[in-house]
Image (cartoon, rainbow, N blue to C red; front, top):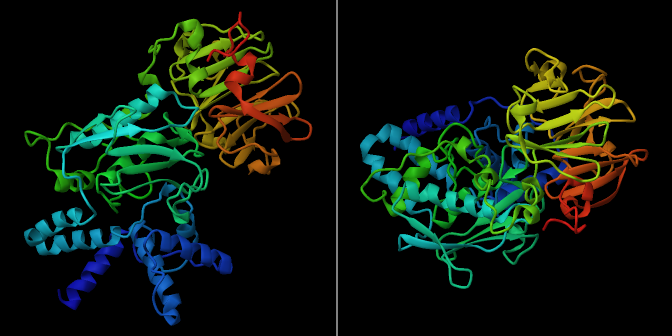
Length: 520
């Protein structure tokens, strides 16, 4: 290839990945540089070997490679966008093949059919492949706060994604027999080397190994979820890591499931054309040569709902309400200490003594309220219900809407997709929580008070991404996330206790009224 064609290719690559401009660099100190170097070495952008004299040039080139693959402005500097990208949760497998893969694909635009076979060969070079098409798998363990049937359903669906578009077939191996692919959750260092040790929420969420070893490992301490936007979507991470166990490396295609930063579930198909080409180059097309219709990601947002009504062999009185064995979307409490717990299209009422109602449809009580609301709070001043989802909010007085239509919350400075809402008695205000921030609303309206949002550290010990918050009669506030709770002293604004809410808090409706024990 001539030098002139090479320059044209490089210019096209830069255009594809965000243009030639970049944010001004901001020096971050030696520690920041060291952390960036460690990240680039871990994910295959920077070699530990090479002449020391050119280390600055090597780092700049590595940053350029990372920016290019990440579709950021290519500057070679540790600007804000680059540093932010490095801290995003992602797969722990190296990106070493991503840049070369796109260079070959861009070359194909110029060389035409002659490089078509070369593009197919690049998938075959990604690693070893299985020399059979019927593969067994085993789910070794899973997070305790997620229901086993729902997790197994997500695993089956993740394998089915790949068998739909290839000649592969998968089956779940018995618990005592061998399995080709094993899916296991670990904490911290688990004998994969220090570079593969899990670091708790955020960072590398999972990693996997190419065929023959056939293992995928997941961080047990991550905030895993099987529904909507809250927490880390386990189904997407499962499907991605299974791709690695089949021999696929990371793809730089922006909407590929195999991109190093996990895909969000949406309207488009879960597997991109790049994913399909990759797996078919290794294992061929499905029998008959046709590809099964791919389903959009929005159909895989709530695996717990797939098992609704499945008793798993237990009677209703011993099984308890569904939310006790998984999680809930939102929770609030009224002035009579009556709980309202929301999940999917339904809600439960729990009286102050712990007696619980049957699940009721949301629309039965609050007409026009959508399913999967994200936050709810009852004003202890006037008893009005406030609901939040996405960028919209609703207000009801009893079952009657106060507003003729949902309000656009962003107009008042409220965050989109809040984690939870709380009526804070000391301030007599609604408070919204989102990630590491909280927002205080003015009285009777949906405007954020001046000097907010503020850092969550003001609420000493409360974790990020909580799913619920309730004021209690004893002056404490209970915060929820997954299967755990934190008790906060309202006067000191500091957590004083924590535990598992379903077996430890009888007023949550998860205790048997007669035996006095938890429904587990």
